[in-house]
Length: 139
Image (cartoon, rainbow, N blue to C red; front, side, top):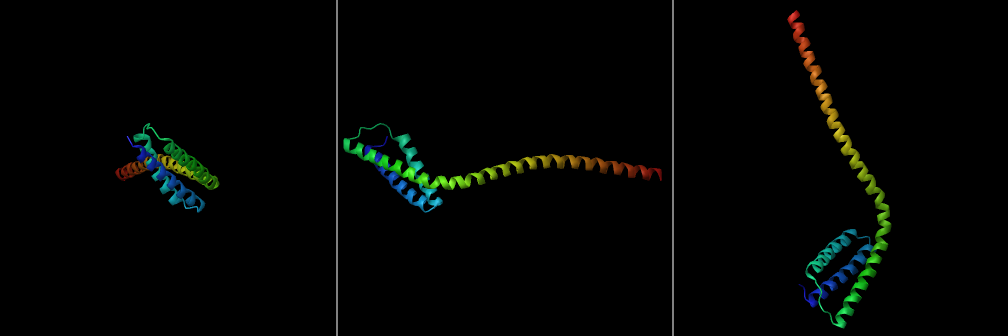
């Protein structure tokens, strides 16, 4: 289980990362935003798995509450920048997903159609060979 000081240090790091995420969102620097969010996710998971209930002093509790409040404010600011971008990207993602499904469906159909054509071509070839053999035997 994490000590109080370790938990507060993690909250502090998350708080700092959210500040970086706000700057990245404002600059449309999605790679930096994603990298910082990945780090936040690891820290959040660590708090969830190793945190536990620890007794906080009044000052520690106030500090933790202030950091959480600032994280929530930063999260709202990040969303304010991400949402318009997401509205533009959603149709592209949807059409890309549809295109991939159609390609897979046509590939499956083409595969079965190819098998049918190959089968028919083989039968025709076999029939032609039989005919040629028959013609040879008649001649």
